[in-house]
Length: 242
Image (cartoon, rainbow, N blue to C red; front, side, top):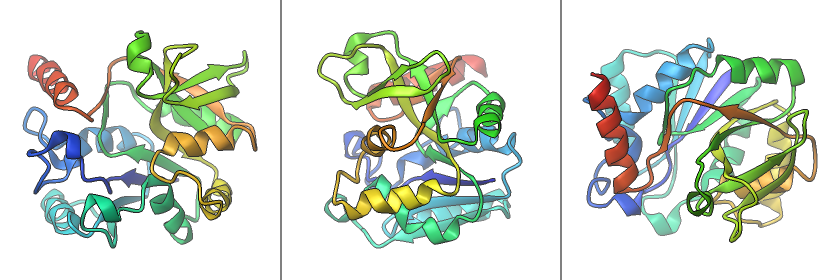
């Protein structure tokens, strides 16, 4: 299995913290956010990890990588140097299609969570279909900021809606997926249709109507480090765990 960590954004909502440093390299309890994610990926015996970033932050990631001593991570940067130029997560993924020769875990580089991904991978190995990691945020107002998922009894996603005005559930999609290699053909098809390529949830919303896609519900704690509040919440949690 391979893995792609999406780290191509400019995190304007976290400025000035992210003016000169990419969000995944911000520190939580003296450790970069991305390293919490890598600890979970390491449990899955992934041989090849691609960090997908932009030209502005390429050097930041290369400097970080050299400090880790890791040999299974590659930094691949697209050409953008500012928010207005960025490809968007879906187009960035599609451009990596030629690098993917196996089934692939895809994760946003700003996710922090406490649960192991072993059962997530186990579900994928059983179904051999796209799997979306879900999380219950338990508040309707919070769910409005994400994509929500409605599941059948067998776990198949029958409805996936990006940023709904009136969420039917508080079960939201995290930017954490496992795709069979063939799904990258669907990614390229989606991009060729000139649809929204910034929000991965839009692609999942479309994909669920094309092929069976399943949801895995994550428990434990999960943070999407998109705002100062969520960043401070994560820092407080892990400071308490020290």
